[in-house]
Image 1 (spheres, rainbow, N blue to C red):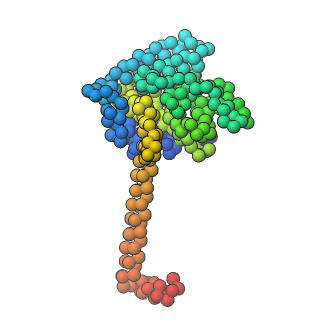
Image 2: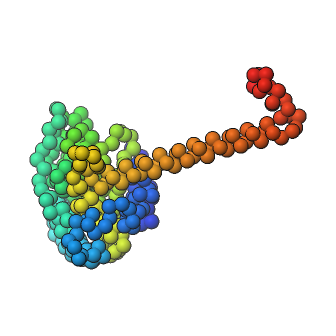
Image 3: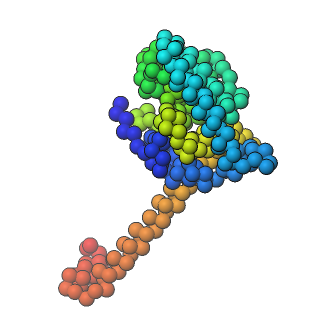
Length: 289
């Protein structure tokens, strides 16, 4: 499957593929100007500032990354375990997923997904070794009961959230990139949001890390659903809804604009006194046009 990766954000370490988010909403979220991005929305205690939290999280992330990056050669042959340990620590200590745990095998119908991690309740976390692309099939991500049982890390996560009513979102990572994906009806074009973690950490791109933190922080995934209002269960859902609403407004505005343009154009044709317009008016009156 051809994968035309597109960048729809001012940060070149961010890739938005497909229709996961509207680009304008993503840009605002990356810059911290989207909805639900106050200190209280990030569950910060009173008196703490977001800027302080960005700095603290970045220092932790840099230390965790440096250890992982420097010790990669020492763990050749154990790349999967090394990457899992790194990403578990990164999600827990830098992004606040303190409830990260093991997710036992999931059986739905005749298919069984292998044991994975769960970043937060209802958010699977699929971790590939750093030597393997998130899009490359490997026996590590076999699904029992599938005709084509070998999957990539991304395909494993996508089929799981598509099949299970308990999961709508998932993370996929190989330690070098982190992707967020959502339940999708499309079997042709992938849809996800990806941060290039390796570039961010190696080049110490603090603004890019802040964008990652704002979008992937645990508070984005842990917003409880309201039984009374049916509010979105995550901040990501809220942003998707806002994007859909803005798209509807844009389409409605375009429709009205086209309608007005056609009316003005048609009126101009009928009002201007030329032989051709006289023939047009006569044909309209006669019902032959």
